[in-house]
Length: 197
Image (tube, one colour):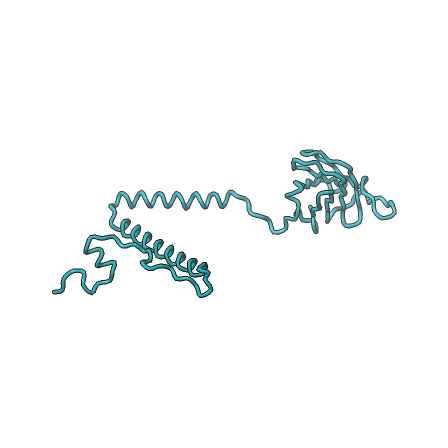
């Protein structure tokens, strides 16, 4: 029978001797041949951090395995609460739509009237800034100009206000398929192919 601590890996020999084992290096970090130890220091730091993380995770797993049932139930409840909280935050936070453009920065919202024989389009400035030099373009050919729209205000656009090329008025029953909003601060597409953006 051999004595304890001989021909054993260092961590087992240290465990038998009652000592703690550190994951730090015993030797100095060597400098590179050009005298810049940054790459070597980064590599050594990453290795040390990885060894420390592995050691902490291993110790935590062993402590968990050796814990009593009451502690395991509490840990399971806490873990389930954490997972459900993260899932709730993920579901509650709005994701970014695929076609946002500057609509969020302008704070523009389009509200369409429900009567097809008398179309009306309401533009809402939901931002905290006023819009200056506003031009609304409907179906790429009819325009309405507004000099100023206050924050949290509404503007209603009807076909009577829309003018095309050479001062031609829009038809009274114009069905909008595309609506763009242009201001001094930027532009936004509010309606494309009849779908709100």
